[in-house]
Length: 567
Image (spheres, rainbow, N blue to C red):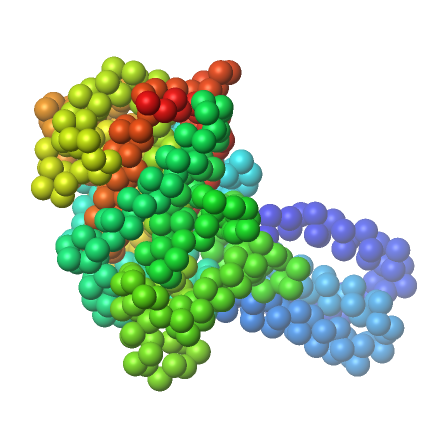
């Protein structure tokens, strides 16, 4: 645990002590040994405890223990010296300052000059505390921060005391591939006691839970969902057509669409966001909650500590309440149509129904909706931006899709493979704007790994920044250009084909990948079949979407005004 204000604290207490020095100097001198002991205790705490293992789970208890010790030391000084409470409290504070100086002095020396990562390039202050990286995230733009880090320091950057960002092609498979030995980091535990397939760190538990999920995404199950997705794609098109060519915020409307689809497939009924305003505040609660996480995503212990405060994170708590109610309703009122959550609810009903079992149901319910809504909305919004700004790509898409549709609004499953340009557009947008722009943090195995010739020791937090990787000239030719053809007719433009990880890879990869792709194809085909023009609204140039989109682990998409004209 780091404190960036030690000098201020010492100065503050020094100002308090100076007036008492003439009368208390002898007493202070008599406590010199105690201060020395506190200094040594601080060093010992670092070397013997904080230097080893993880301590994020116990951060709240650690703070309470320190506050209790402060009270105990004050009481002991009153008893020993016979002074009043104020004088003894000041002396106890000085003892605490001595302890803190020992603790953070030891941390600073080790992290700055003796740590195994000391020779890895990166911002100088980052080596001392993750709070430095966190301080740069006030605009929730970690993907931009990491891009600048790599631009200045190279492919491997030290972003914290034991944190590395890896913009090296071989790192993708080492961290995320099917044979990866890396595990999940402490960050995945910030939402405890809530658990889900995404956050669980135990690989065996993850494997067991994934088998439950897998039944909901079988080819047979996906066929059942396709027609229901089409109903909401049609509803979205009808609502936009009803605007009669007036500008609308594509970001907002794609978000409503994606949430309604997830409601339909998860609970047997959409959230009706496309039709009325009753539940439209819920995505805003999610946005508030994710924004709360954004600046602290690299400091998990501080996120956990703040969540303990009764006045903190009102939005996230309301959002959690909403999903608790949805999970309880789903258990009590089974839908008449098959849904994704039926397997999770069956698993819960066959469990002992302990609190931990319900936390899993809550967590997986939230994961399904959040994982399938904002990420899909983000990709769809960016697709519309590129189609509007590249009319030749829109024309090429029409020429491919309209014959396959043959008057229908959706593709026949057998024709999906023939829609090469459609699939290329989706993959190209995911390359340039991955839904998880800063990547998935991982913990290296005890034996460490080697990336780009650099040995990375065990228990190091590492990540591949996917937004940065998607713009790497080492991986893609003309990486800043929108060229969907690179995914089918110009494969030479992809230099490292195993680096694409927009949905994750391996056993931790997104289990809903096929559903997400089906949903995006579905709504894009509906839009192509219903509207003759797809344009940016007057005065809109997409600059806010490109530059102001937030990185809240998932993407917080900026407003994007468009105009669709119906056929």
